[in-house]
Image: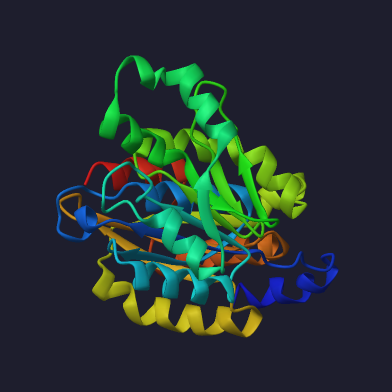
Amino acid sequence: MLIRRATSTLSSFATRMPSMKAACVIIGDEVLNGKITDTNSRFFAKYCYNLGLELQEISTIGDRRDQIISTIQRLSTENDFIVTSGGIGSTHDDITYEAIASGFGLTCKLDVECQERMRKISQPESKYQGDALKAFYRMATLPEGPNVNNYYVSKDLWVPIVSISKKVYILPGIPQLYEKLLTDFAPTVKQIYGLGEERSQYYRRFFVKTRQSESQTASYLRDLQSRCNDVSSDIKIGSYPHFGTGFSTVSILGLAEHELFLKEVVKEVCQKIDGTPITAEMEQKYSDAR
């Protein structure tokens, strides 16, 4: 087999970087009942891939205090970087701050810095009064404690990324805000976790396009995955049909230390299933056209 020739080259690589495990929690009844479509989890998956973080789990849960607490507590024992999305607005069902704080034995308090940023950027006191103003400032009632950090990463936004123990990071659910905050937060994430430039090259992924159906390639790909497992459990072989196009694609994913081996896998796959290598951009184009 072609890939056997590459196996002996793996020992020439430097010691692999320790894996950094990540998880995402999507919070909101409106996601579970189909009112809105979650796009934040997909954005986070790409975010982790680009930073070289190993995304372990995406969990979607409702606006239930006990469920938020138990989910965060469980994920905190298994992961290094946990991001939540949703439940930090001004209405009665926005309980994420309170629930997560409680799960870590903390309380919530009106944060003066956040309140001042609200006044400067949104000028709520010119728009609201009474209960409406009180509800608006509820969004500045944040977890407090010695292990809590509030990161204001976007100058034009008053909402912080609230961090507990530099492990759990609480973000809004609105996709435009979620994406902007995470993007602006990336340099800080690299600093907190000591992610050098080499970390952004942590993964290697290749794609092969074939006219053969998944049923035709299934047996071969199953055997290929088994052989790749003998090299590393981090190597993943995936198959993705593009309905109505007459072709499917095979994904070959591994770590930077596996690059030479993965390239040999690509050669073998092309031979075995009459495939053609394609770029990640082409694969994305096919996927987005579904």
